[in-house]
Structure formats: structure tokens, C-alpha cells
Length: 248
Ligand SMILES: [Zn+2]
Image (tube, rainbow, N blue to C red; front, side, top):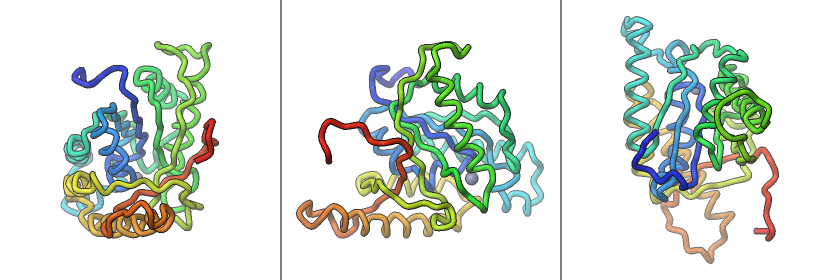
């Protein structure tokens, strides 16, 4: 853990199936948290070495070389966003759901003690690893809350969980109920995207998506906020009810 950060600061944990997912889907949320002085951590369950590294395979690289390549790219992207990153190297395509892997995630929850959790949607007919990561993220969260679960640290509280936007939102039953204004950090998100040259075709796609979510954000915020024309957004779905003493 980065010892330069404030241990009492709020904290954001992003659980990502593959090395690149957190950048496209939650890079703005991560950069915003970091800019507020919060701790932000990305937990990559795999490197995406088999399923999301097509260019490297076509170039004739070997498995270990591809894993090292994706790891280095993800480390650069996390640094661009201001986040720490940890890799569990659990393998992808398929990412296997095992009690051992869930236990490793529990230990991350207990050690990091997040205030907010981001992960994949529970539905994704294009990519079985993404819902698998989400199921394990949710199961581990519940286990980490149990005082009787045998892992170091205090029981976890009840950090809210947000699903970040999948690549094909309609097919993943993704209907946003949170639009996050990432305008002030979009340059950092773009810089993080550009740390992933193996997926260069995604850079403009996710820039355009941020622009469209920004238009929707302004429509939902209303005209009185005076948001700039070039507002950029990220969309999320909240899993558990918001807990509040005042409706807002
Ligand atoms: Zn992925």
C-alpha cells in the first residue's frame, strides 16, 4: 500500500476481471477519487492475457511475455489515474470461480477497507469473465463482513457497490442510475487509455462514450448548474439502496 496516502482518507476499490477493464469503465471515477486525496486501488483478477490481448497473440508473443506486457500497461494506466494496483494472476478465458480466489479477494477487502466498490455487471453475454468477477466481488464482500470469517483484519462495513459500464450496455441489462461528472479529470482518463496500445481501437470509442454520457448528465442535472458544453461523464448502476437522511 502507498504509505504516502492518508490512512483515514476515504477509499475506492475497483475489482476488474482483466488488466484493461478498469480504464475504459471507471478511469474517471478513479481519477476523481485520487484527486480528492482518497485512496484508490485497482484489483485485477487476471491480466486478460488470453481473451483481451489479440494483437500480442497475432504478433507471435508467448503467454508469459503477454502477461508481463499487460501488467506493465496496466501499471502505467493506474499510475496515470493516481491509483495503486494489485494483480491476482488468476487466469482468464476462463476466469475460474474458486473458493481460493474468493478468499484472496476477501483478504483485500479486509486489508483495504473500501468505502466504495466498483465492479462489472452481473450480466454480459459477450464475456463470461466479467460476470464471474462481479459474482466473486460480491461474494467476497459478504464474507468479509462476517466477523466469523477466518481472515485477518476487522469485519468489513457495507461499502456501496456500483457496476461500471460494460462494452455493450443494452445486452448487459445496464440501465444507468448514476451519472458521474468526470470533466475535470478526463485528460487523465484519456492518458490512462493511451497506456493501453494493444486496445488502441477503444480510445476514441470511450472518449465518444464519455461525451454522450456527459450530454445525458447535463440533461439530468438541469440547466441551472451551468455545466460546460464539453461535459464528460461515466455511467454506473447502483446495486444496493442509497442510505440517506435526506432525499437528493
Ligand atoms: Zn475484460
